Length: 381
View 1 (cartoon, rainbow, N blue to C red):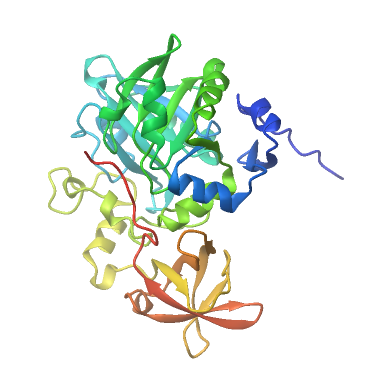
View 2: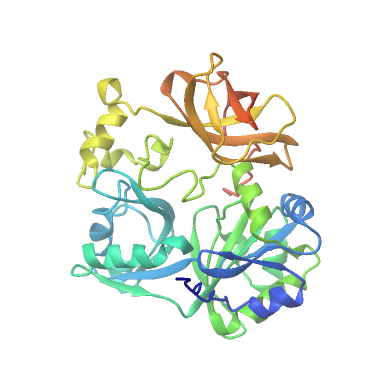
């Protein structure tokens, strides 16, 4: 018996992508542009040097509304939601009861305490499950309101602020990990100064009905060119950023993933609101180290030969024993070296450790290095 594949969803920019000659591929249930005629390498370098426009409308947007929204949301994650100032953005991690990562996300306090909301952006492939999970866990404590009527654009690169400021007054006042409301052509926008490339840039929530017009207005700026999923992946890997489903998933804890920086002190042992999140006992034990330390750690790797090392490649010690696996890997266009991230047993996690990746049956020497592979250029004011 054969099954008919489900029809792919499209974003409000689908016609624009096609008109620009994009190669469309299935991604997270959507038809999405993987690259345009210029190609992945050109799109990657253009983003690093000027400004790239990404369609990320497949991602999920939702609002948490009510005076208890922050405390409720904090009960699902090992991060500080309650103390987040109005207008500030933070990275969060939805966890299951074993401390595994259901999804990673971004959220902004849009003055929930005074009639606003907590604005949340989740990954496209996870959004249906995420929203159901959040509704089931905290839907009695606050309103959980999906926003399918909104599209999402990302404008990334050192000249993004120049291009966007021509269209929208005041965006240059934002700093990294802050957000605010703006207006364009009588449409309400919510813009954060953040992104997934390691560069300065913005993510723009826009009514779906206005997304095409805004995208065309941005592409009319001399600094801006369209960029697809291929370069988005190479940019985020050079920036040392995790891809959900590759580098983190429900079998991975934040400590194994090296995301300790995302776990604020107030939620750790001896913090004012220690624990109280799913998997807290396990995660706090892993943070403490000793007998509770995790059995694997995410690391950055650079190949010492010019051979790209792809996802799911086995990692071995120099004696041929398996010690882990690559979760993301490619030839980094900016660094011009094969880079990867993956998980290894703790004794191989220190910087400078040498391991072998097994590519087509042959060992490729790699060295554990610090991430990001390319310095980030976030604008902090």
